[in-house]
Image 1 (cartoon, rainbow, N blue to C red):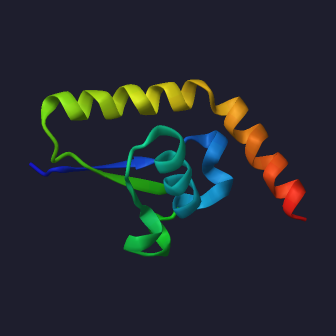
Image 2: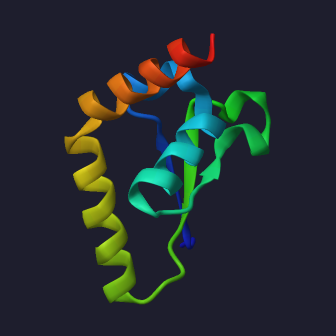
Length: 87
């Protein structure tokens, strides 16, 4: 058994890469994960979750991620607006 979970980036965010997706999840859902790129180029389409918190904090993180993913259309739209403004 291990205390880590390796997961693919959701298809709607795959074009961002694991580092950018990890930053967005931290900013928007307040959940810290490890970008897969940190484990080699082959890991870039994935992220790693460390399952080391107590049950209550883990459930809160799951709820936050679920809410974030349920609102991903708005998140993508906001990202595109920021990129357009920066250009």
